[in-house]
Image 1 (cartoon, rainbow, N blue to C red):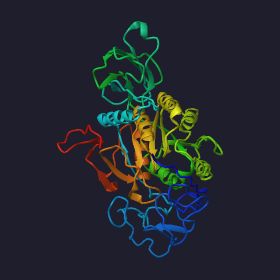
Image 2: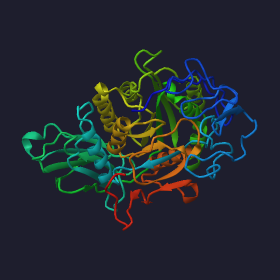
Image 3: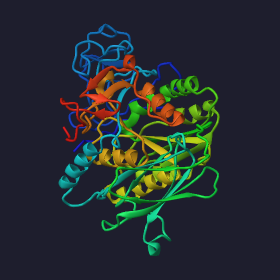
Image 4: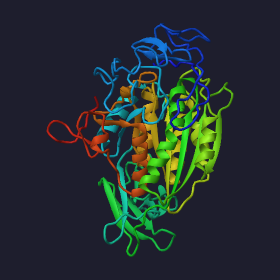
Length: 478
């Protein structure tokens, strides 16, 4: 299993300036001892960080701006020689990041478009979890429900209620969910409490703002249900609630620094695409038992400067073992002052470790509560993510109709990033990806990367679907 290090980086300044950091010693196998870092001309790389004022170039710590830097001599993490095309100079050597926006790289995957891939991964994970330490995920039938008007346009802010068709069982609905801008919700027969014997359901869709519902009888042998609300207007969100839930333990130092630098670029990118949208920002950071704190919560503010200041005062420290208090952070996120109507609600969960196994069910319960509030949970898997975290994070994205995002090694900074159990994806800059995901929520349709923004492609993704050599949807895991 992934060996968790215990490194910490102190607070980062904002914008495009280089963020200064003080690194504590790493306790990872083969690395410097406690309170140590690698000095000038010493070896460096994954788990071995250079001391302040030094960058890791070709496996050796050299002074910032010293010989060997910014000369394109480093081997790109993607496997080719030199720097990855389109990334800032000096970004291709593992370790020694230059903390500025547009450096980190990432991919994204929609499990709802590739359900067989998700189910294969879940099956393999559960087979390996012989002791049953992690919650069993059994979708039964996964059904996408769409609410539209007579013109087929999506209706956001509608209310979707599904109950068993048996009148004696209708008192307790299986789901009661708001639609987002794309007019959709997802229903899982088993995870949402139905039995395998139940095949007929009653679907009621209430118009935005209330009113009489439209009810239909539906069968679970379909992958999609659609209900039409006559006379309903299709409108897009005028407001955005954007929350970041971030693991702030020691191994997340690089990611926390880069998030601080990326925020202004993300806000500018969203503002450029949607200049009239009113945006608020919230932050939850978390660590684990025995650390200075378990969670710190900063509720929504419409001041980007105030949010940036809150973020800049955070630093990565502690952790020790692999799991962290993710369940508490997501429970804190439930209590944020999310707005309801005319609002895109987006949460980025940035982490490199799962919760403790005994709190995994609470983590899923928190995700389901966020789902009930219409929040799209976009996980961003950082360096070192193992199967346990991927299992829960992909499930969170699937149930909230989001995408599973993951950092890649193409930028060549920080510790190595685990390759996900995913057969196809595009690599792009993280800030571009996050802006694209937010824009998708605001526009009511999935927006895919512009070809000129794609740095590398794995497999054959076509509009989010993995296709095999015959052009058919991929159904098997790598």
